[in-house]
Length: 125
Image (cartoon, rainbow, N blue to C red; front, side):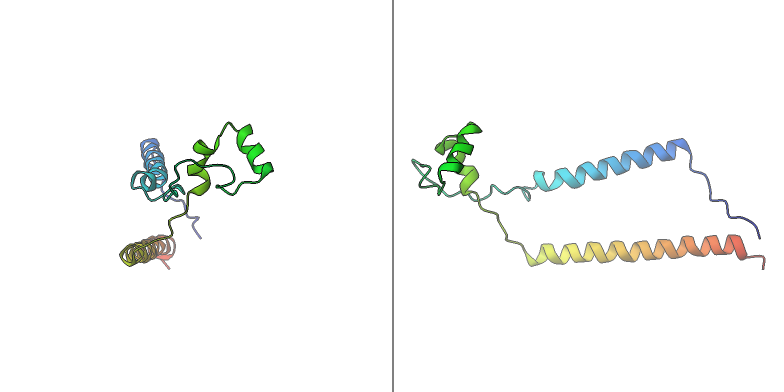
């Protein structure tokens, strides 16, 4: 039985693979920020003259905030920011289509490669 030897990838192909993966990784991290889809500070509660008491902070919390260099006015947006849990059905449907499409593509490409390997290894028998 002949031992299967996979085809070799050239150095330029490896460099291109690394660059593409790097671009995809940075894109996956940066695009949500660029589109404004990430971050918790989306809906701060407005206040004219915030105090530690109006922000619901106790003595220990006030001590920690001041140790970090914050006063009530500068800590206001951090304390009162709320997460935005809204989503659209269209975005959810698009995400499902992309994931299912990617899965189908991977199954199709894997089947093609699997059949090539089987044909290469066992075609003469």
